[in-house]
Image 1 (cartoon, rainbow, N blue to C red):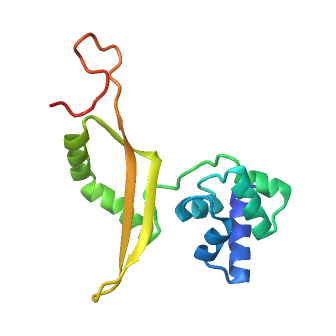
Image 2: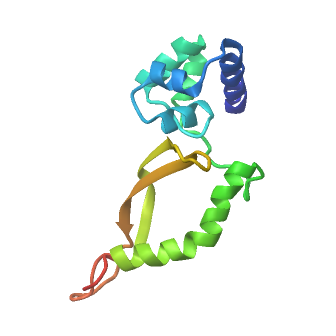
Image 3: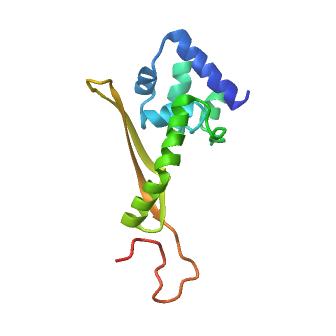
Length: 160
């Protein structure tokens, strides 16, 4: 079985049982619902205790349980063709240069980690139509200036 086939099996079971992601993530627990759903969709791995819970919930085989614990090949074709995913891509294309400038001015020469990272998604009621609130928090990782000599900073934190 390939990982994509396991994802389809999980989605088939979810549909057949009429489960929501909220139900599934509350049953598995242990980490952010975004990470649990990502793992069940094949983009993240589940640590062994959570893989065991997911396998029990979905009645998966031992081999399928182990697949949930493997580090996946992550990502999708770019740009994404799904309209919702494409809007995120568009957000980065349009706003990315401003985000980059503002982050670098505040923190220095570096990146926001997508590994040491938290995300929360919530519904925000609004009279004109509910809104999606996404909160992202990633560790700032300054670039290392290797080969630096005395008096030259080792990393790219914002200079005073």
